[in-house]
Length: 422
Image (cartoon, rainbow, N blue to C red; front, side, top):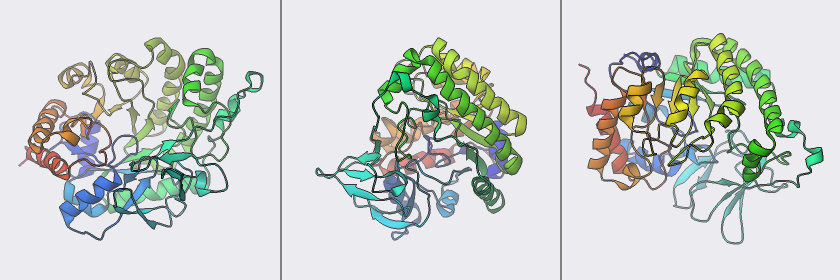
């Protein structure tokens, strides 16, 4: 099988010739720290002067180039929007040195200053005349959003303020997605997943709007969660308008891109903690399901794309609802959380939803285990999840900075050793 054939078979719950492998196709939880990626690339390809591009400055995730993708046997590539979480474009690359001394490339509008204690401050759209919207602690590896909540006047709260970032795609925006998708289709043999704009219903990472210069509405994380209980009408109004716009964009993108993509990343809202659900099932069904159903229906009506839902944590109880809402793919499959046993997940839901992730624990095993422990866990997870197809191998979440390179190499050795094809 080609990588694309392998990906399509996997998404349709057919047994592929070997496990389908992803690393770096989305920025939600399938990526790798630019620092670690740089070290991995040197170990695999030996090109010490190569600078990794930071395609997601928020999490400081690196771009896996074609040469490394081929060397590692990665089957999936991503199609992304033109702007980062801080609102500037991934263009005009310039050199930058991380706190750990790694030399990378960052976008031209990646403008930072240092605070009095040495933290890095980054600015929306690269505009240093407005307050910063992100902070990387001194010696840190990625940015945290800076909350810029304006005083809330209940009498003047307007849901439109929380919809400022949602709009119909321009012809230029659509062309950008199409060009990427067609390039990946014609110049690689990989499967393609597109990260859809504006479909992330309630994703808390987006609430502070680090990409806006002067965000309005409810932009404080705690205040937003409070609002899901105390201002439900407001939240419904935001989600309704967001969904209305998203559905129109899906129709335009679906018509323009067509079969050049096979899957779509829809939403990264988390509903689980390490030990339990983050919200009740009733709240999920009331606040989120109606809009997920509309978005997934639009995707399935206008494309052949499979829909990708991210949620960390212990979400076993919500998986039936997610399936009913029309999601085809679940990520990151946090097997380290309570009630997320791999065998049980595969037995209960393996014929209904594709598991994308769960390949190795990124909380303990991959960063802190031995290469032998990594190898063993990867082989076990592939044996469980890839039986009968419906599994895209990916670590449970982004591979973090300081993860030992020998452990990542052990992960890929285990993937290759699991290949039972002739």
